[in-house]
Image (cartoon, rainbow, N blue to C red; front, side, top):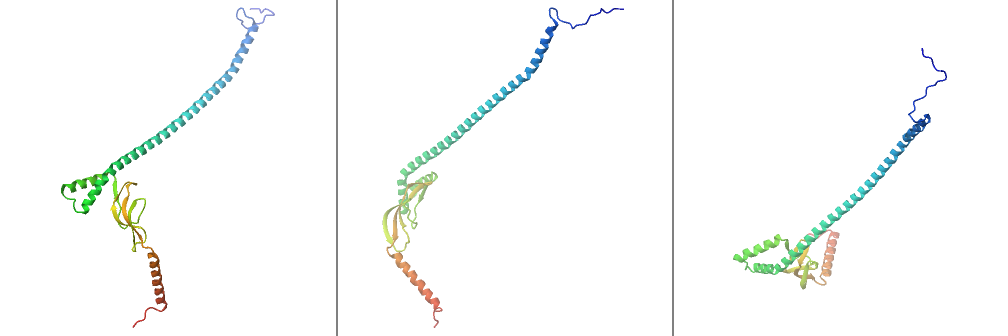
Amino acid sequence: MTEETPGFEEKPDVPSGATPDDAEPKAADASSEETAAPAGDANETAGLVAQLDQSRKALDERTADLQRLQAEFQNYRRRVERDRIAVKEIAVANLLTEVLPVLDDIGRAREHGELLGGFKSVAESLETVAAKMGLQQFGKEGEPFDPTIHEALMHSYAPDVTETTCVAILQPGYRIGERTIRPARVAVAEPQPGAQTVKAEEQGEAAAEDSATKDNGGPEEG
Protein backbone atom coordinates (compact mmCIF):
# COMPACT_ATOMS: atom_id res chain seq x y z
CA MET A 1 0.00 0.00 0.00
CA THR A 2 0.98 3.48 -0.77
CA GLU A 3 0.83 5.89 1.95
CA GLU A 4 -0.38 9.35 1.31
CA THR A 5 1.85 12.08 2.40
CA PRO A 6 0.06 14.21 4.88
CA GLY A 7 -0.51 17.81 3.80
CA PHE A 8 0.02 17.18 0.05
CA GLU A 9 -2.60 18.70 -2.35
CA GLU A 10 -2.79 18.30 -6.12
CA LYS A 11 -2.50 21.49 -8.15
CA PRO A 12 -3.27 22.07 -11.76
CA ASP A 13 -0.53 21.73 -14.27
CA VAL A 14 1.20 24.96 -14.91
CA PRO A 15 3.52 25.47 -17.86
CA SER A 16 7.14 25.61 -17.11
CA GLY A 17 8.22 29.08 -16.07
CA ALA A 18 4.64 30.23 -15.34
CA THR A 19 2.87 30.69 -12.13
CA PRO A 20 -0.69 29.54 -11.44
CA ASP A 21 -1.85 33.10 -11.41
CA ASP A 22 -1.00 33.46 -15.13
CA ALA A 23 -4.02 31.31 -16.19
CA GLU A 24 -6.59 33.75 -14.91
CA PRO A 25 -5.71 36.70 -17.30
CA LYS A 26 -5.92 34.32 -20.28
CA ALA A 27 -9.43 33.35 -19.36
CA ALA A 28 -10.38 36.99 -18.98
CA ASP A 29 -8.91 37.79 -22.43
CA ALA A 30 -10.94 35.03 -24.07
CA SER A 31 -14.12 36.35 -22.51
CA SER A 32 -13.33 39.88 -23.79
CA GLU A 33 -12.81 38.61 -27.35
CA GLU A 34 -16.13 36.79 -27.27
CA THR A 35 -17.85 40.03 -26.14
CA ALA A 36 -16.12 42.19 -28.76
CA ALA A 37 -16.96 39.86 -31.68
CA PRO A 38 -20.71 40.69 -31.88
CA ALA A 39 -20.01 44.43 -31.73
CA GLY A 40 -17.62 44.14 -34.71
CA ASP A 41 -20.21 42.22 -36.78
CA ALA A 42 -22.81 44.95 -36.10
CA ASN A 43 -20.44 47.69 -37.28
CA GLU A 44 -19.63 45.74 -40.44
CA THR A 45 -23.36 45.22 -41.17
CA ALA A 46 -24.09 48.92 -40.68
CA GLY A 47 -21.29 49.78 -43.12
CA LEU A 48 -22.67 47.39 -45.75
CA VAL A 49 -26.17 48.87 -45.36
CA ALA A 50 -24.77 52.38 -45.83
CA GLN A 51 -22.90 51.30 -48.97
CA LEU A 52 -26.09 49.67 -50.31
CA ASP A 53 -28.07 52.87 -49.72
CA GLN A 54 -25.43 54.88 -51.56
CA SER A 55 -25.49 52.42 -54.48
CA ARG A 56 -29.28 52.62 -54.68
CA LYS A 57 -29.17 56.41 -54.63
CA ALA A 58 -26.57 56.46 -57.39
CA LEU A 59 -28.66 54.00 -59.43
CA ASP A 60 -31.76 56.17 -59.07
CA GLU A 61 -29.81 59.23 -60.20
CA ARG A 62 -28.39 57.42 -63.24
CA THR A 63 -31.85 56.08 -64.12
CA ALA A 64 -33.34 59.59 -63.94
CA ASP A 65 -30.52 60.92 -66.14
CA LEU A 66 -31.13 58.14 -68.67
CA GLN A 67 -34.87 58.81 -68.77
CA ARG A 68 -34.27 62.52 -69.25
CA LEU A 69 -31.82 61.88 -72.09
CA GLN A 70 -34.26 59.48 -73.71
CA ALA A 71 -37.07 62.06 -73.55
CA GLU A 72 -34.79 64.74 -75.03
CA PHE A 73 -33.78 62.37 -77.82
CA GLN A 74 -37.42 61.57 -78.65
CA ASN A 75 -38.23 65.29 -78.76
CA TYR A 76 -35.23 65.85 -81.00
CA ARG A 77 -36.35 63.09 -83.38
CA ARG A 78 -39.88 64.53 -83.58
CA ARG A 79 -38.51 68.02 -84.20
CA VAL A 80 -36.20 66.76 -86.94
CA GLU A 81 -39.07 64.86 -88.55
CA ARG A 82 -41.31 67.96 -88.49
CA ASP A 83 -38.52 70.05 -90.00
CA ARG A 84 -37.89 67.44 -92.67
CA ILE A 85 -41.57 67.36 -93.65
CA ALA A 86 -41.77 71.17 -93.63
CA VAL A 87 -38.68 71.49 -95.85
CA LYS A 88 -40.09 68.90 -98.24
CA GLU A 89 -43.45 70.71 -98.45
CA ILE A 90 -41.72 74.04 -99.08
CA ALA A 91 -39.55 72.54 -101.81
CA VAL A 92 -42.56 70.91 -103.50
CA ALA A 93 -44.60 74.12 -103.19
CA ASN A 94 -41.80 76.18 -104.74
CA LEU A 95 -41.47 73.72 -107.61
CA LEU A 96 -45.20 73.56 -108.34
CA THR A 97 -45.52 77.34 -108.09
CA GLU A 98 -43.21 77.58 -111.10
CA VAL A 99 -45.40 75.06 -112.95
CA LEU A 100 -48.70 76.91 -112.34
CA PRO A 101 -48.40 79.17 -115.43
CA VAL A 102 -48.02 76.04 -117.58
CA LEU A 103 -51.12 74.53 -115.95
CA ASP A 104 -52.99 77.78 -116.65
CA ASP A 105 -52.03 77.54 -120.33
CA ILE A 106 -53.21 73.94 -120.42
CA GLY A 107 -56.53 74.96 -118.88
CA ARG A 108 -57.07 77.74 -121.42
CA ALA A 109 -56.18 75.42 -124.29
CA ARG A 110 -58.71 72.90 -123.00
CA GLU A 111 -61.43 75.57 -122.81
CA HIS A 112 -60.79 76.60 -126.42
CA GLY A 113 -60.63 73.04 -127.71
CA GLU A 114 -56.96 73.30 -128.60
CA LEU A 115 -55.78 70.44 -126.37
CA LEU A 116 -55.24 67.88 -129.13
CA GLY A 117 -52.82 65.19 -130.22
CA GLY A 118 -49.48 64.78 -128.54
CA PHE A 119 -49.86 68.07 -126.69
CA LYS A 120 -52.94 66.65 -124.94
CA SER A 121 -51.03 63.56 -123.82
CA VAL A 122 -48.13 65.62 -122.45
CA ALA A 123 -50.49 68.02 -120.70
CA GLU A 124 -52.44 65.23 -119.02
CA SER A 125 -49.19 63.57 -117.89
CA LEU A 126 -48.03 66.83 -116.32
CA GLU A 127 -51.35 67.27 -114.52
CA THR A 128 -51.15 63.67 -113.24
CA VAL A 129 -47.62 64.20 -111.87
CA ALA A 130 -48.67 67.46 -110.18
CA ALA A 131 -51.65 65.71 -108.58
CA LYS A 132 -49.41 62.90 -107.29
CA MET A 133 -47.23 65.55 -105.64
CA GLY A 134 -50.31 66.77 -103.74
CA LEU A 135 -51.40 69.70 -105.91
CA GLN A 136 -55.14 70.35 -105.67
CA GLN A 137 -57.16 72.83 -107.71
CA PHE A 138 -60.04 74.77 -106.14
CA GLY A 139 -62.46 77.53 -107.00
CA LYS A 140 -65.99 77.13 -108.39
CA GLU A 141 -68.62 79.52 -109.59
CA GLY A 142 -71.44 80.10 -107.12
CA GLU A 143 -69.45 79.42 -103.94
CA PRO A 144 -69.33 82.08 -101.19
CA PHE A 145 -66.38 84.46 -101.36
CA ASP A 146 -63.68 83.65 -98.80
CA PRO A 147 -60.87 86.23 -98.62
CA THR A 148 -58.47 83.62 -97.22
CA ILE A 149 -58.58 81.53 -100.41
CA HIS A 150 -60.06 83.93 -103.00
CA GLU A 151 -58.66 87.06 -104.60
CA ALA A 152 -61.35 89.33 -106.02
CA LEU A 153 -60.29 90.96 -109.30
CA MET A 154 -63.75 92.14 -110.39
CA HIS A 155 -66.73 93.37 -108.39
CA SER A 156 -70.40 93.85 -109.25
CA TYR A 157 -73.90 93.74 -107.78
CA ALA A 158 -76.54 91.14 -108.51
CA PRO A 159 -80.17 90.91 -107.36
CA ASP A 160 -80.15 87.12 -107.20
CA VAL A 161 -77.41 86.66 -104.54
CA THR A 162 -77.84 86.92 -100.79
CA GLU A 163 -74.13 87.18 -99.95
CA THR A 164 -70.86 88.01 -101.62
CA THR A 165 -70.51 85.23 -104.19
CA CYS A 166 -67.92 84.11 -106.73
CA VAL A 167 -69.71 84.50 -110.07
CA ALA A 168 -66.70 83.77 -112.30
CA ILE A 169 -63.36 82.00 -111.86
CA LEU A 170 -60.71 83.97 -113.70
CA GLN A 171 -57.85 81.75 -112.50
CA PRO A 172 -58.24 78.60 -110.39
CA GLY A 173 -56.54 78.41 -107.03
CA TYR A 174 -54.11 75.70 -105.97
CA ARG A 175 -53.20 74.20 -102.61
CA ILE A 176 -50.99 71.45 -101.22
CA GLY A 177 -52.66 69.90 -98.22
CA GLU A 178 -53.67 72.84 -96.03
CA ARG A 179 -51.13 75.20 -97.64
CA THR A 180 -52.56 77.58 -100.27
CA ILE A 181 -49.88 78.28 -102.86
CA ARG A 182 -52.12 80.51 -104.99
CA PRO A 183 -55.56 81.92 -104.21
CA ALA A 184 -58.35 81.57 -106.75
CA ARG A 185 -58.72 84.80 -108.71
CA VAL A 186 -62.42 85.50 -109.10
CA ALA A 187 -65.11 87.99 -110.01
CA VAL A 188 -67.54 88.56 -107.16
CA ALA A 189 -71.06 89.90 -106.92
CA GLU A 190 -72.72 91.40 -103.88
CA PRO A 191 -76.45 91.71 -103.20
CA GLN A 192 -78.05 94.69 -104.93
CA PRO A 193 -78.34 97.62 -102.47
CA GLY A 194 -81.94 97.75 -101.19
CA ALA A 195 -82.76 94.35 -102.69
CA GLN A 196 -82.93 92.72 -99.28
CA THR A 197 -85.31 95.40 -98.01
CA VAL A 198 -87.63 95.05 -101.00
CA LYS A 199 -87.55 91.28 -100.72
CA ALA A 200 -88.37 91.45 -97.01
CA GLU A 201 -91.29 93.78 -97.71
CA GLU A 202 -92.59 91.47 -100.42
CA GLN A 203 -92.35 88.51 -98.09
CA GLY A 204 -94.19 90.48 -95.39
CA GLU A 205 -96.98 91.42 -97.77
CA ALA A 206 -97.32 87.84 -98.94
CA ALA A 207 -97.53 86.62 -95.34
CA ALA A 208 -100.18 89.23 -94.56
CA GLU A 209 -102.28 88.19 -97.57
CA ASP A 210 -102.07 84.53 -96.53
CA SER A 211 -103.17 85.41 -93.01
CA ALA A 212 -106.11 87.48 -94.30
CA THR A 213 -107.19 84.66 -96.57
CA LYS A 214 -107.19 82.19 -93.69
CA ASP A 215 -109.19 84.58 -91.50
CA ASN A 216 -111.87 84.99 -94.18
CA GLY A 217 -112.30 81.25 -94.49
CA GLY A 218 -110.43 80.91 -97.74
CA PRO A 219 -111.24 82.12 -101.25
CA GLU A 220 -114.90 82.29 -102.35
CA GLU A 221 -116.08 79.71 -104.80
CA GLY A 222 -117.99 80.96 -107.90
